[in-house]
Image (cartoon, rainbow, N blue to C red; front, side, top):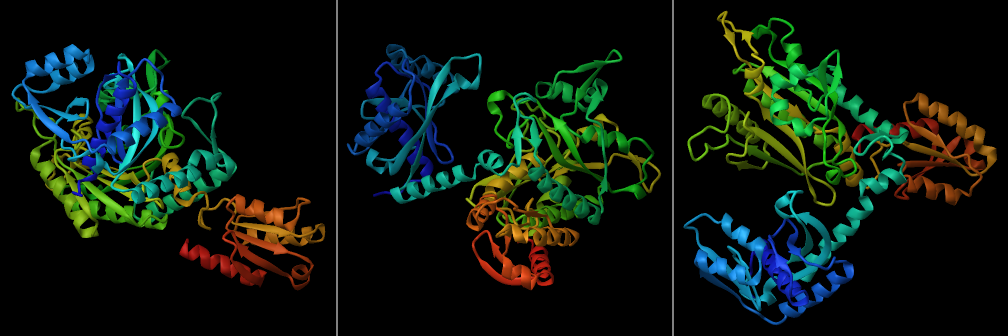
Length: 582
């Protein structure tokens, strides 16, 4: 059997699904059915509202079509022939998609059994070659993604080369469900989102706040050690600030409505950078003052459609670990290298070792020759070379996204892989040639003349909320000792050991550990089960023997028995674990 790329297999599976839907629902109208990262989908206009039982029927029909060894055949039509074809069948969505094809471009159709689709291909040769597939769910999808258009029904499926790969993928999905940060956030009492407070606004509970405090303390210490200075800025700003920055021109739909104060409009900040720029402009800067490395854990507010909100991953209020570097041309290379190494150190500290870099370069000109980017091309060249050299020096694998940079500068994006092999967009190192011009930033050079500085936006985590969600799922809630809200749970077997455990708790807290004591009238087995359920890393059981010997019977949440230890040995063991962080 010929081997085909997964994308080809998945796109072919979408056609087979459409063929199955056509057989079961003859009046269906079709839109598009592309391959996706894991599978495929197809958008349908069907009078019947589909449910899971319908998906079972469609999948069974797909199996029947696949086993029929039907060939995929390609036919080219003229625009007139294609238009007549769709008009006769009442396929109005396909007529509109046909109009999107530029004049002179080939118009090709692929046929699989009785189903014929407007498509560029390629496809497998025969339906038996689409491998293993499964339909996952059905959801609403506006035609062309516009809420003003009709809501279609989108069926999602996954497809792989064989059943073994499909089974492995489905197992990963099951594991991902167990690790879902929304589920674990509730079970472990870490955070909540209240409809009374507002969608997309996160409430950090004490246990979640413990972890956030550890992260923030670590973040601040490392930034100070790396030569950054810390800033604090307001949550709102006057409209003039956002007019100058360009946010009201280009980003207003993502901002909250203004509030009127003293006959002036104020906006909740969607970003921190204009405030940092105003601090820079508060005094005359010399080249001797540069670089400025300014960092802030700044809470910002962005309006997201309610349907886009997703636990901690997509919220309306979040804290960015934001930083801006303002420096000279001569300093930029070393600054970028240092930032990238800092990013790698941070991610490895939190247990992420698989990291991929993506370099986005200057957007290409429009067909009419108009520039799609601001700033001197020579500045872009220098900035892009700085980013690429920094990646090469780090030894990271990277891909270049030609023309994929924002209009205001090239950037590096880092993506990490979690315990399930899922890739997450995290750190960004972004040049900005727009804001220095808009705010007229300058410094006095060694020649006594004014020069415009380079400016770099830099985020490590992206946002604390999203990063926390990633952490929860990466560790399945079982955080390493240094991050755990409860590091040690003391478990007295009977009431007789309560006083001993409470005294031990005081001593361990003095030594810097987060310790709780289970004083409930439950069995030792029940207490251990509860502690493991709360993912507490270390449990110390105390019975009459341990109390008499002034020791603890120490075990881990993985059920490793570490033996009997006195307080001094126990503290040394915990400190040794903390030094390694894992």
